[in-house]
Amino acid sequence: MNSRVLGMVNFGPVFRKPVLEEGSPFLSLRMTSADEKGFVEQWTAGPAQASVSGNLVYAHDGEYLFCAAEIPASERCRNLTRKTYLAAFELMDELGYPRLFRMWNYIPRINEDNADGLEIYRDFCAGRSEAFELYGRRRHLPMPAATGIGAQGGNIAFFFLSCRSGRVTFLENPRQMPAYTYPRQYGPRSPSFARATCVQHDALGVLNLYISGTASIIGHETVHRSDLMRQCDVTLENISLLIGRDNLIRHGIETPADLTLRDVDFIKVYVRHAEDIPAVRRRCREAFAPHANIQFLNVDICRSDLLVEIEGIITVPLRADGTQDGAGLKPRWLVHEETSDQ
Ligand code: 3EB
Image (cartoon, rainbow, N blue to C red; front, side):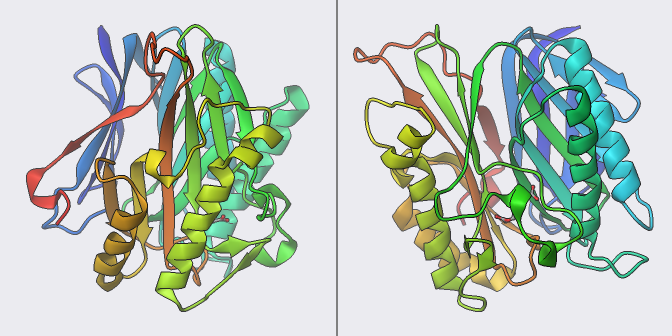
């Protein structure tokens, strides 16, 4: 069956492993409390073919691949993380969508210890890093933009987007150490991600910038450990620097106008303490454009001293006359009225 839906992700109160629902991949993450409905993120594209392979559920349209997977529960997640990631990389190559540009990883109990006393996030990072290393022996696979964040329950799950022919550029932040070179103090293996990915299809007249989960980290260190507002400010500054003119030029990307926080859309703001959400919301409302889609999710963050993390997407028109032949790949959000912008 062909559908224009590449994939749907529910950010709601119940976890359900990825399945095909009405012919499209559907993953439900437990990211809200029972009385909040949350929102659905829908990725649409050209007519897509959907299928299931092991615990991977995916759809592709000739240019884009969406794939979601559950990592089944275990005492230690390293091996199944490596295995599931490797299966995903193989699928990308088999189907011909080798350019992995954006991944999201949702990890319940992220700051708790596993059976060996290793933090679950660090255990996850170890398996993920091994998968990138093992696969890298076969084919060069750069680190994509990513989010690695807590969830309120369920199993570890991820979803990702890769493409066939788009030009992809991976960005780093000038005042942050690349995460994949973080020192050993943060775990046996570093997190595997870039700070953003730029995806361009020359015929389209737009580029898309997918901004990774961004936090109050300078160099490799968390700054302002227990100061919520300062963590918000550093996080927003990190995004500004990442998308700013100098950094884009450094990465060989030219845009007609400078990009600022006002250009960011589909912003997910992850907040560790529920009681901090009103203050974070006020700060974000000032920083981002009034029309931007923003959702606030109360989950733990991968370092126990981080209070907030922010991700988003920018679509940039490239032609002087403002014409474009498509918007590139961006999501639609179906927001339940009760929980929109309380
Ligand atoms: C950081 O900058 C904060 O493990 O995939 C941000 C984005 C973070 C992605 C991941 C982790 C991840 O290190 C944490």
